[in-house]
Length: 439
Ligand code: SF4
Ligand code: SF4
Image (cartoon, rainbow, N blue to C red):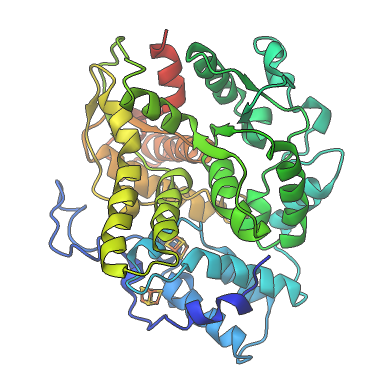
């Protein structure tokens, strides 16, 4: 496991230029379709909500440096500032010095907790529930009920002796079972011989993000023991996918023995290889929201994997940028393959996408910030003229639906003019649509 101390040299590269506060810092003259969304837009949900330097990544990097140099004492206040960040990684995309901003923030959180500061109340509860061997999930649900969602329609897939597994995740297993059901259905329609393991436990994402590394290590080891003999692990949850694909090898010190793909990526692979064609129409005006975990974080990881140990930075940085951009195109290529889809892009997209506001433990601990971020993104989505905001992440879907409800309430009860965003826009999961379209 790494520590904040291991990231000292990376953190030292921060020159406090504050480029990380803005989306599109590389394209200051970029024009948007509307007056509101154009030019150099702020892109950090935490900084935008709180407005203080410490909440932006630039401030957090300097807090981390002061902490490393013994210039400030760890405290509850410091942890609250460090935790009020969705770990969306927008800042990481912008940083000209390739600073692993999110790793630094997560290690800062862990270091403050290791120094004796109590985790924040809601985060502590996640930790306790995931540690509990009868639960092993942050929803306080019985571990024995983990595959209950599959009993009726997918019982034959449970604990099957095959080489491909679907990692369902706690949200799919206990809260958004329809997403797990659609995913299993898609995989069957595609002829994938897969299993769902009843012994699967939380991937550890909510624990890792909030600085509770000891508990994380426990679940990571358990999952690696369970899944290491598989050839391919498929996901429907952006958070589980990012955690297992990017964080497990980094924090276990060992490369994954299996390939990890999100189901949307798996569908893309088949489309690209000419093995799949979608014939049914979906004639709707949509806009696409890139989930930070499965799009930006994986794109950044692909870039860094190519650059790691590079002996020709000039050549490899072009190759790395190209590979990252190709990753960002995957959901767009899938949407293009659906007849009838009219895609209207938002202003902040791909690596510069504005977060939904739910990640990094923010939704539970800082609900007002999560809601405000969601509403900001929904307004941006509506500004494209789309009727549907499509994405593929259980947390984005939940937080956007909460944002829609809040906007509707403001419009109906307080007469706030939100240009009808709350009543016009519908939030839809791409996996649900793919299941409906595939035969
Ligand atoms: S993290 Fe990078 S972009 Fe942000 S202030 Fe530091 S050097 Fe500048
Ligand atoms: S990860 Fe996202 S919320 Fe956190 S500091 Fe960076 S841009 Fe802001």
